[in-house]
Image (cartoon, rainbow, N blue to C red; front, side, top):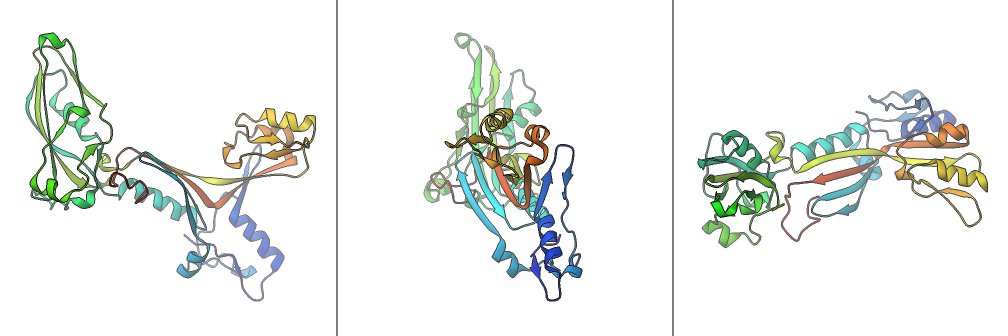
Length: 321
């Protein structure tokens, strides 16, 4: 995809070039249509008006900016500006499919007399997220099994007796089988992200006894290695007034918005309290039509990432979000 640089060359037409820049950078949402939703898809499309939209790494470094707004173990939010949607979508796909994590791959079932079939039980175990830095493990060679330095070993053994009634087996019941390498070299041993995930239930006399092997992998091979439950982005909003709203009109505008985007100053004039809270329900546009304008920046993205499988060391929340 082309990367709009919005640079004017000699011999161009300033007024037309400015209008083309606006079309490239923003789309406008109206009550019955969206204007200018597309972006330029090849270099040289605006050469006739003196604009160079070809991809250039040096120009990209000048205009591109990424700001992390919040990050913790489970969620990360950041803004990314100065890039086209294909570039932003490429980052989203990389976060979903190409970030290494650790997940259970082999389940050796020695005993299972519970209600869940072996295949279902193994599938549930494979989706339990593990908190561990994958850099501590080597990649498993194709066709190879557990070898020194390329896996984690866990064990689960639970047996329900008559006095237990119905026994619930949780992810916290999994026990890490520490190796000499792990004890000596890993400053942060592997743990489970959530220890209250229900695996199965046992009745008196039922038993499960199994061993689990976890390897390093990527989401493009299987979803259990994807570090996120969801990753998405939306375009940055910009809301402006063509005419001011004051007095009762300001109150009506504030009340018509279900997302509380608008508020009222002490002077009685309406203002935009939170641009990004707008979900484009278009209620305000349907009511007031051309008196206000809702635009979206086509090169400014708000990313939201909900993580369920950690790939950072404990205590280092911001190392790699």
